[in-house]
Image (cartoon, rainbow, N blue to C red; front, side, top):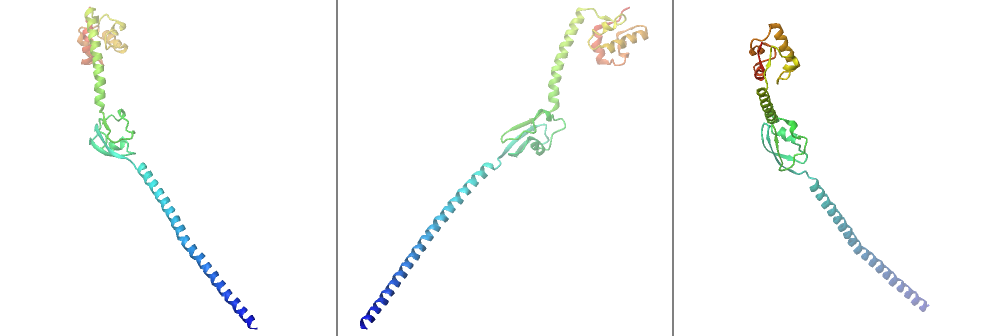
Length: 223
């Protein structure tokens, strides 16, 4: 019986030591797990922060590239307030004209492209209609002078047309006399028994001082 009691005490003792060992092992596993979890969490948080930073950086670049550019342009000519005006990426010259008080009454908007985007450092001069008209008039005047000179030369080298014997065809060879005016001259001659002087041409409707001055060198009054 004493040996059986000693054996029982030995088994109980070993069981206690085994339980303590198992408890220590479990505690060690839990402790190790607790250490690894913060590290993994730190790595995950770090990765998340890096990703957020990268996205934030990309967004900053995109915003800077899409931000509208701005600057200044100069508008002059036929606008009410010529000067320097601020423009954005979408500002058109029509907007600049409005900012400058609008066009003047003698402006020629068709000579410039007001639908064009106004870019930084550009200039625009809106022309005046009189400038274009003056250029055209100068060309016409030059041509008219040449024609007058040629006509004068032809007149001096050929005989003047007799208003009392000329036909409609003869009269149309005179500068400034077309079919209707030639017929009006013939009708006047028939109604008044002929011309007594060249000045009587001014009595015909439509022949004023200017037209008379053009016709006079080419005509004469004879029997």
